[in-house]
Length: 334
Length: 255
Ligand SMILES: Nc1ncnc2c1ncn2[C@@H]1O[C@H](COP(=O)(O)OP(=O)(O)OP(=O)(O)O)[C@@H](O)[C@H]1O
Ligand SMILES: [Mg+2]
Image (cartoon, rainbow over all chains, first blue to last red; front, side, top):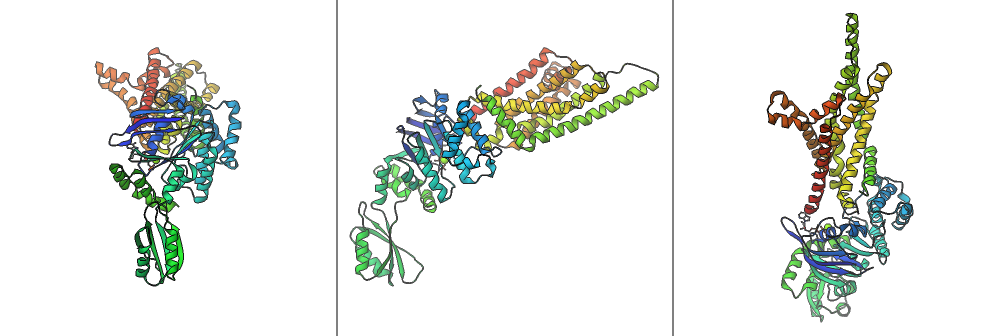
């Protein structure tokens, strides 16, 4: 449904998208995962014919974005990073306007508006001014405008950014429910978002595709070999550390100040591909301490980047320099 | 051109949803009314004086009232037109809604024509509201209808041209205030360059004053439609719309 070959975008100063290629099949949901400035928005803008590429080709539903932009535009629904809303319009008026703009036949328009506003749960605010809506509702109206003409392809740029956890869940459910009828590309810098909504992840950083992987594989990677948080009721930090370091498969033990007397916390990293939790639990209990918490920390986006790209030294370095900011942000939002 | 009318309706909707349309109308009607009142008062006084002195030269309502009022009100246009055009594109660029328009299956030209048409319709409404006061003239005087209509037609044509230029200026910035100010400066410039003909009668002076909107508006206020004036305004409209199209296209390369 979407075919991208060697797509490149150069700005006056920098190359934002550098020779990326990927394909998306009909009905798939693909996550575009990358840190800030990776080139996600730029790629989406080229796919939606907002701006022409500097090089390479992109095809949407069999039409080239440069040669037949009109055909592409008819088949794409696009939710930009900031929903393109007119605050002085009512929700219903706005959807009516977008429907006409997208070429929905006027005989079907009322029905379509009804359908999408029910689907995106904005039916109850049809007569409200957009300027009066909450952020979550605005985002949903943004989604409703993207699907009003029942497009083959949906392109969603950070559809859950700025929403509260409940709304994030609702939006993800909504997006999942849209798959099948539509081919969807969504961008995000949150790893769990891709895991929860998408089938395939395209990981990009600094304008390059780092990896294309199924989400199942991504999850495995994230679970395996990752760090564990251990909280133990014990007096001596040194003793616990010693014990933990002796557990087989443990590669590194880092003390985390807990602030409470009698409780010590460690971050324990294991060799990759090995589940060290049972061993740790046994070691702690055998020593007579009580185990308060034993929790896999999961891999940050940074670590996933490093893993996915290990082997190619240059890429590894780039991911390492590009990722820290993302790691932080991800932890915050979870 | 599919979509132009949809966009035009949406623009009119936003004009009337905000105070802009009402402010523009009220301001225009007020100033027009003032000019109209002072011209009429002067006319009445002058005709009374000439009656008292026993002279009864035929005083012409069209010449004495309509023409000066039309010329004066076209000056107000200098202020009003930038107020109408400044938000056209600047606001869409600022808020990001331009992404919706450009990624919709409509041509750039349809977007531009739709927006310009909305501006022209608003301007027409503004002029019509102002023109209501002229109806009084028909109640008590006997002005010629044709020159009045021609005069208003000229005013409209001049407005449509300046609105096209203003629309172009609005495509070049995200900032409404900048768009408004630049629009005002350009309109003013197209206005005042006519003065050059008063002290420079060389060919250069003539060419420059040819570019002035005043030079081409004046015949209309006298009730004369000259093809070359119509051509001038229509070319200005095409220039403004063409530049807007170019500007939108370059926006996509840079954006
Ligand atoms: N109009 C522009 N002119 C010049 N450079 C730009 C422009 N827009 C984006 N860039 C640069 O291109 C790179 C990619 O930007 P892009 O917005 O595509 O990233 P992104 O992946 O969407 O990031 P984010 O997660 O912050 O939205 C960045 O380095 C950015 O500075
Ligand atoms: Mg972005």
